[in-house]
Length: 285
Image 1 (cartoon, rainbow, N blue to C red):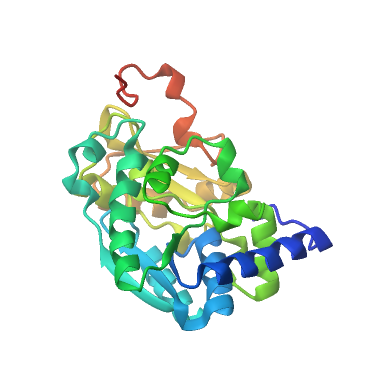
Image 2 (image 1 turned 90 degrees about the horizontal axis):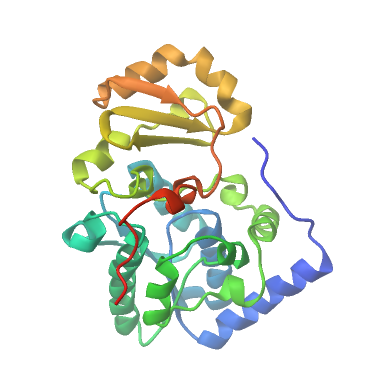
């Protein structure tokens, strides 16, 4: 599986240096850390720049895959950064459960409420996240929640793109340098389908153990009995070879029907049909 990795040019190195200096200027930071490409890189650089004045904070909830939490914990230990896991309760927020197009706003509000509490007990640390320049071009309702909580985006502030973050991560020896982009489990539910712990548990179908690298399992609108499997385009043939095992695993999760998206996984898939949705967008006055 190939990913877009930038060349380590002088310009990229300069951004890395600028990031270190920016983090040092904060004095202390709390990193909103999921263990993905961006937050792992930010946690590593924050630890390099600030040592024990950097804290990584991971939110645990039903929307986080258990294997992702385990990987995040292991990587934080490898980096050496102080790491805490806190419980978040987005499923207690009715506006989150409704799963309208603004769902991420309510999720991030819950997350940043929690991280701000952590920052207050960490002697006024600055909360930072892994938002980068690529995120500026996608639909990101959670960005509004970050602004309301004074969360800083140091990767974007120094102009780092995803491909540049991957290149620097590879140079630093981070195992996440070629990790696929993984959104939360709630993103596997179509907009308008209520988010429940039962549904999140059913889509947590872990196919990586069958040898797939970039894989998603999504619910299908108006049919809780059907799951749609998405893998990277280069891996679609592998789905056919592992068909029986995939069907068995999906059926064990409670699905009667298993389908394959022949277009393959691509970033922003959930948002492609937004213009067709009726009455699911955020309310305006």
